[in-house]
Structures are given as C-alpha cells and as structure tokens.
Amino acid sequence: MKRFSKQYFNLIRQFSVTWLKARDRRMFLGVIWSFLNPFLIALTLFFIFRNDANHGGSFLIYILIGTIIWNFITISVQSATTIFLWRRDIVKNLSFPKEILTFGQVGMYVIEHIFEILILLGFILVMKIGFSFHIVLIPLIVFVEILLALSLATFLSFISAYAQDIEYIWAAFARVGLFIVPIFYTIESLSDRLQILVKYNPISQIMIFYRDILLYHHWPNMLNVVLVLAFAILFLFLNIAIFKKYEKNVVERV
Amino acid sequence: MSLAIKVKNLTKEFYIDKDNPTSLNLLIKIITLSFKSTKFMALDNISFEINKGDRVGLIGDNGSGKTTLLRILSGLYSKTSGVIEASGKIATLLNVDTGMEWKLSARENIYLFAMMLGIEKTKIEKNIKNIIKFAGIKEFINAPLGDFSRGMIERLAFTIFRYTDADILLIDEMLSSGDIHFKEESYNVLKEFIRRSRTMIITSHDMEVIRKFCNKTIILKEGKIVAYGPTKIVVNKYYKF
Image (cartoon, rainbow over all chains, first blue to last red; front, side, top):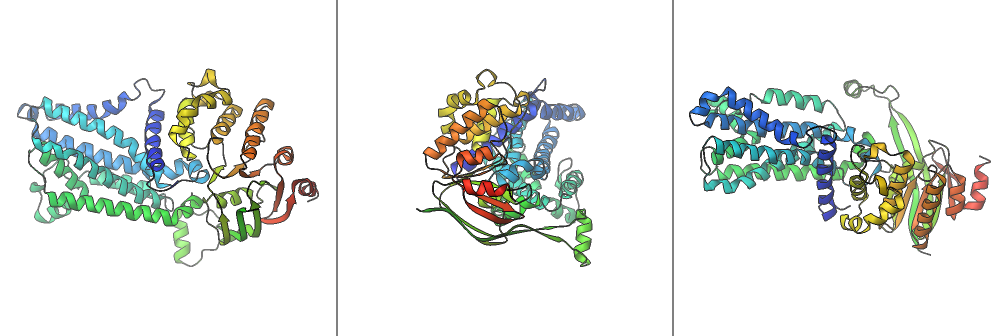
C-alpha cells in the first residue's frame, strides 16, 4: 500500500470508525458516551461557575474550550503511545505503512472531538454568547489542532516502540500540563517570564485561536495560525519520513 | 520462464539479550559498555529462485526460519544482507485472525480485514454476497466474531484473501486446520489461484497440502536451505532429516 494513496486514507478511516464501534459495543449507552462524557464535563463546569453563567458565562466557555482541547490532545496522544503494543499482531503480520495505526487511533478521538465541539457550540448558544462571522475560521483551527495531535502522536508512538516509558512520561506531562497551558487562568494574570512559557507553545495557541473566534468574536493572530500549522505539518511529515526509514526496525522491535 | 522472486545470499541476524533487560537496564548496559547480546542467525546466506506461476512449499521444523523468510519477502522485516528481487505485488496471510475485532460482527470484520490486506472497499462491496456464501456464515453475518469457532474465522479470512489482486501470495500455516469441508473449499480456492497462474509460497507442516499444491518445495533447517526441488523428491527427503 502506497503512502497517501486512496487505500491509505480509507484504511485510516476504517480503523478509526471500527475501533470506536468496537470500544462502545456491548455497552448500554454505546456511542452516546461520546456525547455524554463532554456533556458531563460541561455540565459540571456549568454548576461550578454558575455565578459566572448568570453574568454572561464567558469564563465557563473559556474553561470549556481549554478543557476539551487539552483532553483531546492528551488522551489521543496517550493512546497512540501504546498502539504498537496493543496492535502487535497487526504490526507483525500485515504489510502496510505502520503510521496508519497511529492515525487510526487518533482518528477515533477526532470523531469524539467533533461531538465535543458541537456540545461547546451548544453551550455558547445556551449562554447567549452568540456567534460572529469569525466562526468560518473554526474548521481551519480544528484542522490545525488535529494535525498537531497527529504529529505528536506519530512521534511518540515511534519512540514508544523503543522505550515504553513514553506512555508514563506523557501521562505525567498531561497532569502537569494542566497548569502550564491556559485552561483555568488567563495568560495576562501571569508574570512576563511565565507568559512566554505558556503563550509560545502550540497547544496554548490552539486554545487562544478558539477563544478569539468563539468567545471574543475577533480574528486570531493569523501569523500565529500559520506558524502552528507549519510546525504541525513539518513535524508530521518529518515523523512520517522517520517511520518510512525505520519501520522495519519498529516491526522487529515490538 | 520469467522469475517471480530471486533471492541471493539472504541473511537475517537477530541480536537477543538473553537476560531480557528493562529499558533502564539496557541503557545502563550500553553506557557502561557491558551490553552483550547473542547473535541468532535466523536465515543463513540462502539463495533461491521462484518462477512465475510456481507454487513453492516451505517446510521445516519450528524455528527453522520459515516465518522470518515470509516476513522479509513481504517487506515486514529488514534483511541483514543479500538481495531480493520480486516481480509483482505481494500479499501475505501470516495469521488468520490478525486485527479482527471480537466484539464486532462478521460483516464489519470482513471490511476491516479486507482493507488491511490492501483490497479496495468497492471490490468487497461488490463481492460481499459471495464472501458470505463461501465462508458459510450467512446466518451469522451480523453475530459478533467472538462467538465464532476458530475454523469459521479461518474460513472467513481465507475467503477474503482470495480477493487480493496480488501476483505473489505468501501463506503461513493456513491450511492445516479446519474441518474436512473447509479444507475442500480452501483447496478449491488454491486451485483457482493456480489457474490464475499466481505465484505462491505456502508454509505448512501438513505434507498433504504441500504434495497436493506445490510443484516445488524448500526445506529450511536452522536458517539454511537443505533441499530445494520438485516436491515429490524433496518431501521424501524431509522425513530423512
């Protein structure tokens, strides 16, 4: 199977959909969990910040945006760090570009993330924050966000084939990272030095883009959008090139 | 006759640490230069040629290098040294239930398995009725695969495999199990492959399969080819090793 052929993309989609179905099968609520989980998070935040909700709800939406982006990136990348171990039989016995497994795994969470964004939009509507024409840029921001998750997942899934500690390192990062990206606080409340650390990482930037569009109703800094997009694309293609070169080592290693 | 596969001086070495160290131990060993691994020669300087349309049996004891050879030919493993030339697309069936999802239905698994083998989705859609019919699972097509017997899964996998459009088929230990009807049906599929002049390499411990379908046979022993030639002669030799 050639990289970037029709079959390549079809197989990624097939893995994402099939694995999501397999995960939810034999559950009472099945695919409803994909809606229910983000809805429960949003509802919990709604009750915690009820006072804010009564005064326009902007802080609730601020936190909701941070939470769903952080959850999507950390959980999808975390699951990708164990993909070759869990799907060892496929890695060892079937001949197709192995990054497809990583993409399929992240793709499963992309489907859920779409549900999360819909719930976010629903809460924006309920909070009467309203939408502006800037919303047309949201598909591009979601695309950048997915590319960023894919590039991180590809890199870490490759490294995990050699050192499975990566799963734990990423889990630790996900816990600590809660406080080094602007989920619960505003960047302006930090000292100048900390602002640089928090502001100039791509995950924070994604949060800022979403908030600019959905909360503050203005265009995000387009230079930053292009920079994050370029970083995600370059990092992704660099990782695919690494996979191409060392794929057989990965197969033998797992 | 033109060649389908040419293998020259193929060697595959694995380096195994018998202590099975943790990643940290391994790192310490490498830093302190105390890392010692044992070289395991899975394939030792083997050479052979396979003509287009040949059906080659690959036999040998467990650990003789059969699966490693198939994995290298299919591009899964790297070679340590040597040259491999293959003319045409290669499809591999090394393990029948690879990647199948037990909680999902047979129908859902047909699409998943076929696409992992590189078969176009449209081709599966066009042939889904035939696959269900041949696999003999019409009544159970929407049942979860976890409820299927091993024989049923093998039959399903083999049925899907017939739709691959590869020129060279590599089949590992597929035809040794299953009931007598399944074997008969699988034999018909293999006959169809042969009619279409597909080149095949089949590994099996079942000499009936090798005798029935392979015009040539290779015996591997400890990573070396100890015999290669017409099946009738080579299989008789196998019993003497």
